[in-house]
Length: 242
Ligand code: Z5A
Image (tube, rainbow, N blue to C red; front, side, top):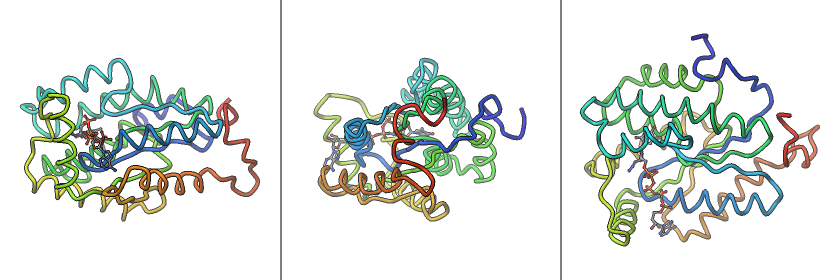
């Protein structure tokens, strides 16, 4: 594998990416907010591809099923991190890169920051090891904007529990971890935002969905607004990667 690593070396990604990821702890409202953002962007005339991790491609979804059912747990945290990375390689190749190349905005519900946070904390894997794995899996195919939905874990887990009780679902692989884990998780996402302030925006998610959506829109519309030498139209359908 070359220094670009993963799928990066196979693809010409010289144009700027319109690759938005949503991250954060449980019950922060990512699924709710990615849907609202998609509608808003489509209303503005953008082509949007909404996807998620783990999953987002046929093979990625198979790995998702394996991990979230808890079957990956006995292999240990590092092996789980490798599984998430394997799913990510396929997801990039099959879904994300083709969409970016035709000029779509990709919105992804979780991505590599989740591996940094969850597997980093769960298995106390050295950050350098997680970074090396990330480089190998994604190469240069990094999100250009990451929205971190920040929520006290007590509130986020209560939301996740209420939703689960509503549909009669089971606790998944990570929801079953203790409160200390979820507090560490919150800190880990906030640390990522501090380390990469250019890419990350933290939004308080313990407020009404429409207020959170409005704040996200302010961030995204500013991020999309034409830079010097670029017309607004350049950022709409199909003009960036043709
Ligand atoms: N994982 C990992 O360990 N490593 C990795 O590399 C990756 C992932 C990529 C995927 O689970 C799991 O995989 C995840 C991390 C791990 N851990 N877990 N568990 P998932 O995809 O099944 O679920 P999730 O990503 O964790 O999402 P979530 O926490 O279940 O939910 P959410 O998307 O953040 O929130 P939501 O579904 O929009 O909302 C939850 C409920 O709250 C729902 O009933 C809403 O109606 C309600 N809600 C939403 N917003 C609000 C507001 N603002 N107020 C009140 N109620 C609200």
